[in-house]
Amino acid sequence: MDGQWAAVGALVGAAAGAGAVYALVRMRLRRMKALLEISMQLNSTLKRGEQMELIMNTAKRVLPVEAASVLLVDPETDELFFELAQGEKGAQVREIRLKPGEGIAGSVAQSGQSLIVNDTKADPRWSNRVAERTGFETRNLLTVPIVNRDKVEGVLQVINKTGGKFTNRDRLLLEQVARPMAVALENARLYAKVEESLAELRSTTAIKERLESELQVAGTIQMSFLPRTMPSAQEPYDVCALLKSAKEVGGDFYNFFKIDDDHLFFALGDVSDKGIPAALFMAVTLTLLKGKMGPGLSPGELLTMVNEELARDNPLVFATIVCGVYTCSTGELVMSEGGHCTPYVVRAGGEIEPVKLKKSLPLAAMEDAVYHDGRLLLEPGDRLLLYTDGITEAENGEQEQYSSERLRQFLEMTPGMSSAEIIDALLMHVFMFADGAPQSDDIAVLTLMRR
Image (cartoon, rainbow, N blue to C red; front, side, top):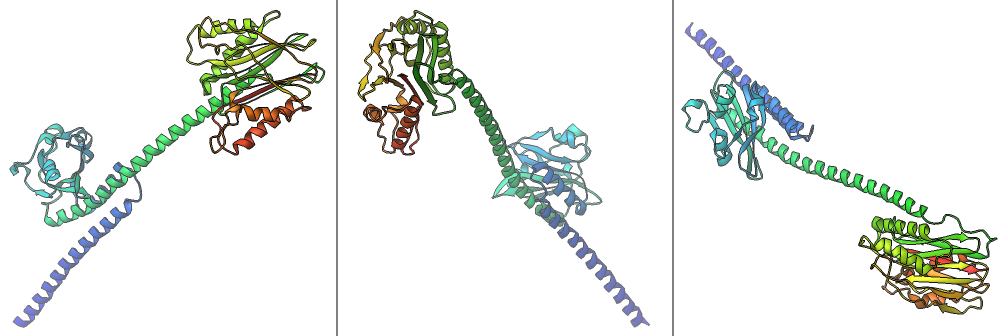
């Protein structure tokens, strides 16, 4: 009989042992499942707060506690601040910052070693500042470091384990939870940098697009100051002009208009700057030229008046210019210049003559500057050519300039061409010389022929 009872006892003991083993295996499986879920959650979001919230919610299913928090080290002050605080007093807790080394959390952050404190009142490292602020009673807590590349970046803390004390098994689990938190921090930092870079890129792109739009508008406004149509073939002269800006807007300009039935005014110039400042100065200059020019006024007198207006405010830019009045009935040209490139006359027989005008200062370079008049005569078939230094100073890949000599050689080939044909051929000649080398200066050309 005793043997039977012994057998029964053995069976009961074995069953109890098997039950304990089963419970242990089940608990470990739950924890392994929780850790697997945590690893998978790292890919569900790249936002730091969301990642840590997901990780803590998963961990608390296998380690039931009343509250949990994540404190991170402020790299500037070494203080600990609450990145995540779960529990009834979470909002109040997040307002608190711990000094370096303060409390259990501060001690773990400095040492890099986990701590189990099952009786907070008996531990000298315990700081009750959070408890006093929130009224939350902390009986026990488990704190582990969050380590990334051998550097403690914060601590993970769970408070008041439900139904008992914290154990070394709990510590091992929480340390395993802390490892993906370090990865989450690293991912969040990279994500934040990407977000910041994208924001800067979006801002830069928006600014670039706005500037491009404004430059396009500025370019359209600039072109509106120039003559849109060329004179008809019925006029006793053939005039044509072209402006090609190196950027969206530039500083070169030209204009021509009839003063009366027998007189044609023309001008071509180059502002010293580029971009919008040059375009604004160009617009003001063209407005003054057209507004002040009238019958009986010579080009020299006009430039003197315009210079007084432009130089009065001491602008930071100036403009070289050559302008003139053509008398249709006689072919007489009266011209004046301000620091501009030498014009050329191409005679009907092919001779090339530089127009020698008395030199003056560019517009707005100095107040009280005086501009002089010069005269010459165009015979039928003779042509006047005005240009900016974007022509003669165009460079090829060897930084060799197109030069005035090449311009003269080109003009020797132009007798019999119309004004438009000469301009097209000249630009082609310059671009072929440059052979694809980028040009940094604007180009403007104007030709006037007596029919």
